[in-house]
Image (cartoon, rainbow, N blue to C red; front, side, top):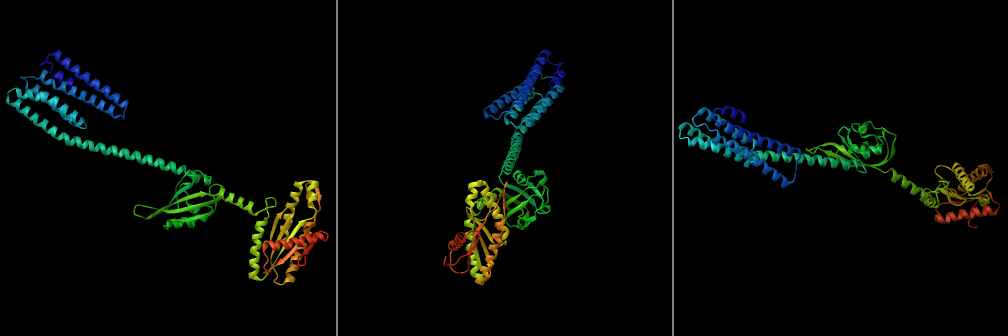
Length: 470
């Protein structure tokens, strides 16, 4: 526009003035372009730097508007209406353009409009001619309308930008919140899954994928109805019915061969209308805890060498057997078994061979009894067999116990292969038949022990029935 104006004014304005004016216009606009490019390349959020840049921007706006306003002093053709109209057209057009370009900064927009138009409008009014004065007056009306409208446009743009900034900030917050949410889910030590109303898995975290030993993308979109182990389905269906339900038990993974124990809590997921649209499952893999508990139980109630019940578990089962005996009237029996000359084996072949013999004896004892009976090792080379459900009649119950004891004697008299050595071992067996005679577990165990010592005293490899004369 500056080049067009200079070309149009070439015949009525001194060329030196035109060249100087054009050079100023080009220089200021080039400087503003360079500064604007720099600001875009080096953005800042520092408030003081922003205020400094805004001040520089306003100086550039004012400088450009002053130079354009100077055309009214340097290029105003007093006797050429066409030239005057062209100048008015250009300057009012620039002012209108600044109205929108600078309206976000009220000071810049006002400064550009005033500095560019007021000198021209004054020149029009100063001509003293009716038409130019009319154009000058119209220009002032235009300028006044522009200034009055500018405030509303400025406020509207500020509100629009404010809303946009808020929206961007909200989006950043949502994105950050979602990132935190996903980070928490993926780093959670428990497995988490979301499923829809058709039991399709719509999300699972990495912990659940680790529990099931399967990639996340192979779990997501899989229908739970098609899983290998459907024991958890009643719990999930309760969640879809609006309940919070739990499951505690074994699981078998569908995709992998993973197996273990889980504690699962399923809760319903609702939409905005309060309708159940799916559910959330929280899964704890308690396999390690279960194994640890089993190991603790094994150590507390079982002999570590033979894996048989120890004295503690035997007394517990004996107490239970006494209670059942009272209710049913049926008798039971304790068989106290001690290996003859076991110390000699340890001293000659070593304790490892002694331990091997104890394991073999434990296996043979278990083969001699029913599933309902108990074989226990209570220490050293001493074993106890608890027989339940014998006859109500004393003599018949004693006969049944003797038959089982004879079976044990026969089994334990067979040779043992201890590594390269074949070993022969014999047992001494004491029998104590019981019912509701009021004896405690310890007393009954003592009776069977006394009977066993009577068998040893009588020559070993025998069985003896306890009676109170002993």
